[in-house]
Length: 264
Image 1: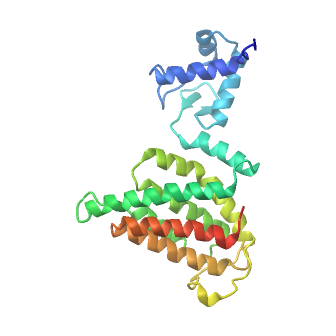
Image 2: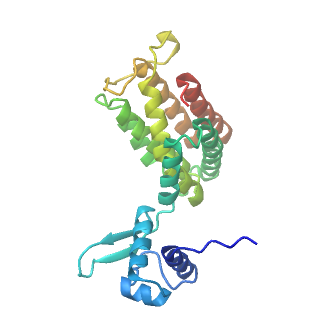
Image 3: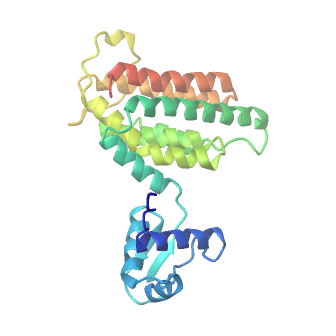
């Protein structure tokens, strides 16, 4: 008979805090009790409580402030993407998660999200319930800035994709996309740095204003122009309330970049 592993004391604290959240005894946005109170409540040492607090902070589930005033202590925060994002970045860096799988996941999530957003827009066109596309359009405009290098452009690009997913109105999808954000940004930045010169510049849309940064591959200006054109088409399809076109465009956009760069 195999003995069951004994949980470490800090794991007991984590489990009890989770149970207290689920039971309503702790609230998101509220403060955790102090070390001494938690140690007595959970029957563990203060060192175990401190270790649990460090784990929660690393996971992005609490925010701590030193001192003894009213702002001191640990606050439970609501950022469901934080722990998912930390795990995703780690596994991508260690190659435990193939980039190809991340790309396929993006296609599934983002094509669904744009289909939902465009469907909602089609129903609401001409009413006060129409989608607020302002933040997405602001990001598009920012990507036109002439001084942007690839790294800055791609950071805005990733935020644009998260914003498009948010338009679907599904908080879980938004959390997942937010969590994937840095993993996406990492692989696309690496891909652009390795871009070869475009073999036929006439086959791609004009790049428009852009500058070369130290992380830009030689084919970046052409790729930037293509991405701008595709981004505009995707957002226009959502704005027009065309779910089929919106979903097809974002899938082609993600898969096309992956094929063109050969990343992963």
